[in-house]
Length: 518
Image 1 (cartoon, rainbow, N blue to C red):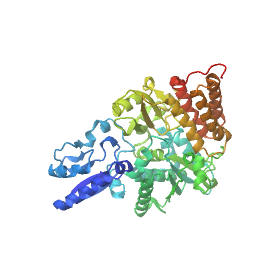
Image 2: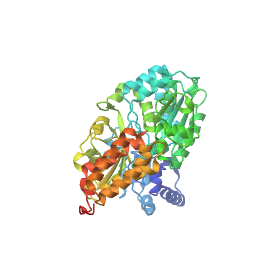
Image 3: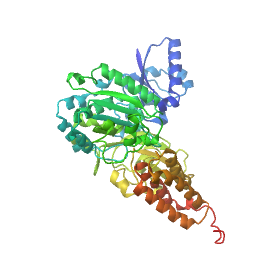
Image 4: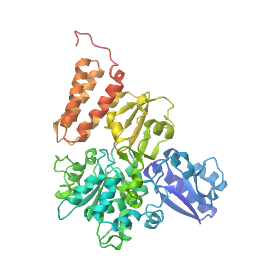
């Protein structure tokens, strides 16, 4: 029986993979061909989706991008044996887009069956957890600290320091919480991992529990990710049945259980304290800090709160050791960063690269430039609150400190490309609009400042007392940066000030009004 692999990743489904599969199954049945269909995640080469991989003596041979009308010609060409066809790609492992990456977290995504514990283990899964079970909690925490792993959710805080704080906190109960409320524009790595390799996340969270003495974990998933939600619930059930989760992890006598919770569509719940409020059944509003969640988090207990990619990095670190992980990257940015390449780009997708690669290499070397063929004008990195960089700044290395020096942030690693038709004044206005819509409303600088920001930009673009309003905008941005309770209001000025600094001409479209009218 021939094994055929096709992605059930949400992006692949949106491009027609379900229709491709249905047509293939019907055509195979009509021809009397026996197929074993394996529904995988995606490898992240979205410009080649939907694609099919076929297991042959040469390895898995890929064909794509496909249309339903291609199935008959594929079967006629003998593609089930790796036959030649215009859509034949060959082994994906030989495609430069993948060979030039450093896939540590995403090594299994798109390769294994996300519902099969046996397949996960056959491809190296659970080695990190088994090593963790042989270590003392402080030894696990030391591995994470020495690896240099930093939070992949945006702030880049050292993961090991957070874990060490929870480990040393005195409490009758502790928790592990995964922030899977991936709401940044151009970001999809969390979703891809949960849909394509959920056991990696489960393993990482279980190791975290062992490290700090927590026996309960929660996975908070955004409501817009129904496929990921279902995939994680199925994986948790399979992991529990296999003894990876439960009262005795892999027979060790040490407990860790895991539950999912579905968000309700609030961007602010990506902020860790708002997320905790939501998990407790309350409205998602920001908590004042201190106390830190590591000391007083979920239900007032010490809590690890990390992003999906932070937890997913942990099994590799425990399996290979902190020194192997720290050899990737540059400076204080160690390991790999899953870069999500989106927007006006030819070859959008998921890249996992060591820190230090430049934006230009990501966009031009991997992405192939703009999809429109027009010149790149701006690139936004780090979601809707990230800076807009002009083309001449694309040689910045993707490194936390380098981005901070350029008055930007890496955030979750989302990269959105714009060609020369973009209006940066419109984009800056959107940042304020977005903040006004998504603010939890708890603090005045964010709640009111975002609304005033929209009004000020409108006056600037209209040419009304331009110099005075630009000065007012500067003051407003400084106030929001310094006085907002959380990063929602504190970072909203970043895209605004970067647009105003690098693209001032977009704010100067209307003629100046006569002095008398002003």
